[in-house]
Amino acid sequence: MFFYAKNLDPEQQWDKKTIRKFFYSEHPKYEEILRNRVEPDGTVQYSPDDEDSDKLIFRDLLGLASEQSWRFYDDDIITKTAFSKSGDEIQRFKSPITFKPILRSNGFKVYVLLDRIPQVYLGSKVAISSLQFGNEEEPLILEIPDTFSLKGYLTWAVKFYHSYRRNISNRTPDHSEEMRIIDVIYNQLYNQITEES
Image 1 (cartoon, rainbow, N blue to C red):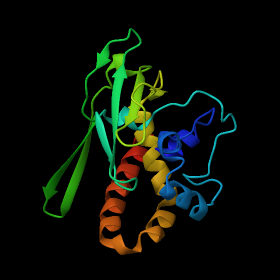
Image 2 (cartoon, rainbow, N blue to C red; image 1 turned 90 degrees about the vertical axis):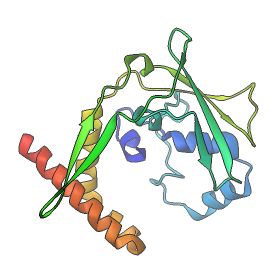
Image 3 (cartoon, helix red, strand yellow; image 1 turned 90 degrees about the horizontal axis):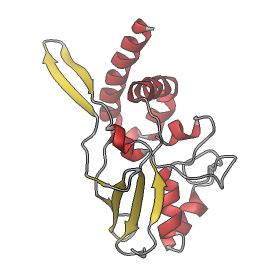
């Protein structure tokens, strides 16, 4: 999702960076990350040209959970509450993406099933709090984008993975079997996308 946000026009900042900076900027682990991960286009250092623009939350487009564990920061718990444009609280919704692997004689065929993101969720605001490092009276407020094409995002993600997969595989040598399986799945998806084009 980081690369997707970065490649939008205009560029957007990944919500994880916004959350990390808001709650953990004085945490020793955050300072360690800033020192050690110095690549200017990477997830830690990259900022869009318009750094003062309103920050968006992208991760929750793929399913809204009310809690997330941030183990790196003293097992902190991040809580989220979403509110529609009219101010009504939005309950959790499951991921709009379902992967259904079917065993065949020559391996697996993976089907990707897409549901619609609830319209009330698009453009909503999400109040984000930290149980250990935040003030509940002053949560971080991020907005869900007004528009989002799930099919467009997945098409972009599959093409992105296809063009960068060697770089990704080289970063995870300890997980070579898992990466091989992921590579097979993405290659199937890429072939299907290019056949449809």
